[in-house]
Image 1: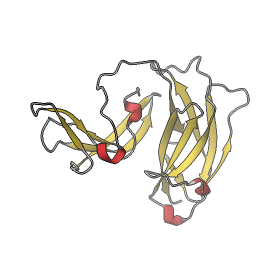
Image 2 (image 1 turned 120 degrees about the vertical axis):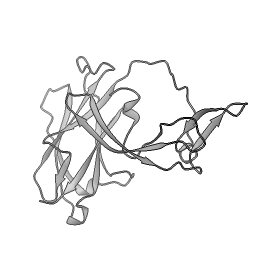
Image 3 (image 1 turned 90 degrees about the vertical axis):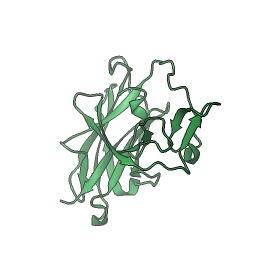
Image 4 (image 1 turned 135 degrees about the vertical axis):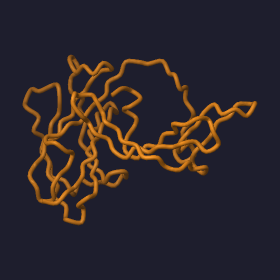
Length: 199
């Protein structure tokens, strides 16, 4: 994970294409945090170019010099594709068990957020205060009424924050996704998409 890959999240659209009139576009369909820490496994699916929201930037001679997904929808200004890197801190949420899933009427599951520097080193980076958020995946809809959780960070621990949670919603949520976020007071965010399954 780095400054660029940290901006790729569920449903993010990317144009990975030759400079043609209808570029090839991909959408992130799955984000998994895998071992070792700081490594993300991203799955993409090919999707159509959208001439209403996507934008092809051309120079004065008509040559394609930039391709932007969701340019009009999100009002994204084109940015320098080769910015000067700067030191930063990012966070990563991991979970207990093999898969990021919770069961309807199931037991508690642990989620842990840790902070790392550009070289994925967490030494000398104290925990950044913040709060947990729960959303219906791919939306801004609050899902906190579907979650029961408790802070279980050990006393004196300054390297991570940890909670245990369980899903308290009904069977209608089976096969749907919930996003679990940790948002630091300084604006550093990370999340994991969790699938709801039946017992």
